[in-house]
Amino acid sequence: MDRLTAMRVFCEVATSGSFSATADKLDMSRAMVTRYVSELESWLNARLLQRTTRSVTLTDAGEQCLRRSQQMLALMENIEEETRSDDAELRGQLRLTCSASFAFAHLARAVCKFLSLHPLLKIDLHAGDSAINLVEARIDLAIRISNDPDPLLIARPLAVCDSVLVASPAYLRQAGLPVQPQDLSTHRCLTHINYGRNTWHFQRGDEAVQVNIASHFNANDATVLLQAALTGAGISVLPTYLMGDHVRKGDLHALLPEWKAPDRTIYALFPSRRHLSPAVRALLDFLVEEFASQPW
Image (cartoon, rainbow, N blue to C red; front, side, top):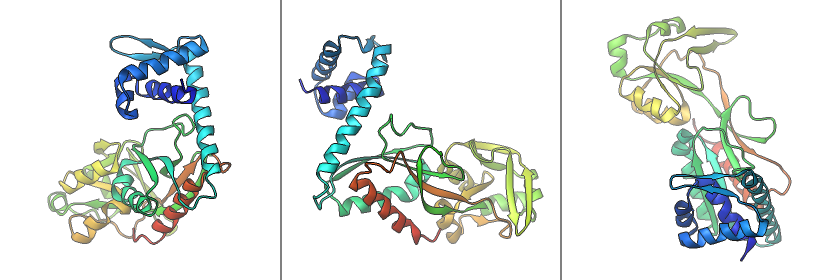
């Protein structure tokens, strides 16, 4: 049997923990998935997976095989891309990861626009903020919002991420309008679990303040905080890429406009400049141009 295909099947089973899910994703029968894994175990003369009625887990040999298989599959993809470098048409599959809020607000639209220009390409987009090892997960690009990107990755800036203090008219009628940052300590605040949960920072020229806030609702995604703010649940610091239209329509009011929340940067992160495929390079250039003129 094709050993590369067997490795690909094994990697999918190891990642999903399910033979059935792997069969559905790879469009093959469950029996064929089982056969590929069994053939790989026979070839290596080692048991790679522990199977029970409820779970599939890796053995020690399976963990080593998974790491090496992922490296070999990535190398094979690089070889395929390089041998097609003289082809004007981009093709193959790219894997991206991005926060759910930015994927919802802008990235999904941009990616679909890019795909319309390159119809032979396929793109998988994983939306979420959880930390992912790009090499092990075979991610080509990670779109992350940060002031401190991973120094082990190559970071290419895409855009500045401004954030603004906002609340709904209904909440402000009930709770009153804050006139200085210190007033926020008496308000109901909606916070991001990983960013400013207990303390908010603002700057006005050379003047900087730090405000301890009472967080009444926490979430790990800015889209959730946006919906909470729209319902009148409290005040939140939200990125302009997400809530700008709501401020323009009057659904939310921008507060303390003279005080600025810390800027962050939207980066495209990737493991290495070496062997960067033409498709990844083209997508990077496209995103830089696409987001450069956004009125966030």
